[in-house]
Image (cartoon, rainbow, N blue to C red; front, top):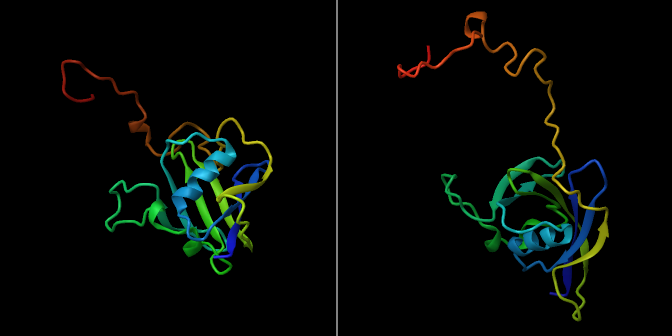
Length: 173
């Protein structure tokens, strides 16, 4: 192949933080995963997944780093999926989520195909904009927080009394 994929990887944050990455179409998503972490200065070792996405960034099928056995059908793993098979002019978007406890979320967008430079190694980060924050940006999932207490109106008055555990009993009273 004489061309590589030029991608823009954007951190889902209020500030503009993104990296332009070039990768060979035959390189797999596990390699892309590693170059994203390296270019954003994130340590490896947490669970992650790519998700196929449409032009409106709706989350589609998962492509995990490893199979956790949570799906009825086996999922294709990052190491088995070539970048060029999921990113192109016709399918330009992927979502990437790293560290499911902190939810580092990235938008991966196909920009173009560019000429392969035989003297360079791929993948490579070709442009770096913005500083990666110390911790994952907080997500706003919308909606309103309960006004009165943590559970809002979920319990009636009879349910709102404090319940105490009697150590001599096997249940709450």
